[in-house]
Image 1: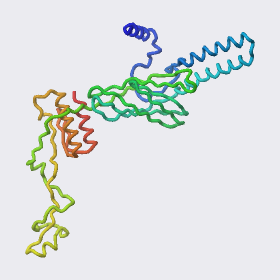
Image 2 (image 1 turned 120 degrees about the horizontal axis):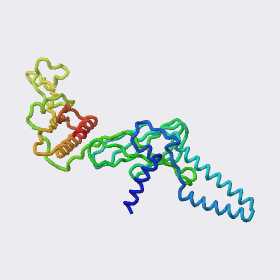
Image 3 (image 1 turned 135 degrees about the vertical axis):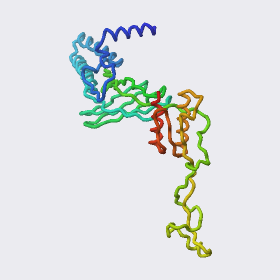
Image 4 (image 1 turned 120 degrees about the vertical axis):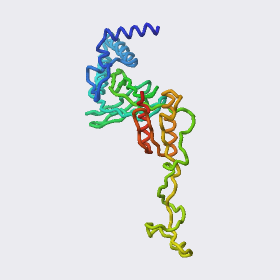
Length: 317
């Protein structure tokens, strides 16, 4: 049965090019128009049409003008709802798509931005089994958030988006396909556990002194020390001057994350380990650098530096 449906779908795509005209990716912005909006009656609409047909036969059979007028009014209302459902999509514009960050296997948040010159209500956007409803005000933009499933690291093209509406009466369903020519970058999945990176505690470069805010100790006065750092009360009981020392050793050494430090592992295993080290360094608020084949990222810290390093890992071949 499944093979028959697949063959039927392939035949339809060959024989009905109008239905597949917009299957290929398109650059943004994408604006909907009458040639790419399709409309069919819903199950409720078909049942309502059968009811109107029965009412029409009964009104004509019994020559009941009131019933005939009611049937015509209901038929006009249903036809008008078809036009309203079509106009709810006609002219809608997809202007921008923004992507968040996620590791492979985790959902990645997409922000889809729509804009319109007139108000629209009860529009729905489908993506990979998800459905999100939204409305657009006149000359305003609306952001719709969806979760995109990810499978592996690297650049992942966006799938087709289905935009549809059955407003206002639910008798007709108007829909259109959007296939933006965009891709999102998926970060590599960190390994679950493993050894820590090399960070020698006796490295003079990593354990350099830095000036802190709290008093560390008192030491003898040296030429060039500022007078405001002299401890006058403590110096009164001694023959020489004492100075407040605010220099403290850096508590957390800098991590040098290097691709070359992982011999014996394949490329994906190295990427997973480096991704775990980056996450640990970010969690511990350490300063770290990253060396990759053909690319070297200087030392830094913070969310932007972490995103820069993870993106560099994701783009490796």
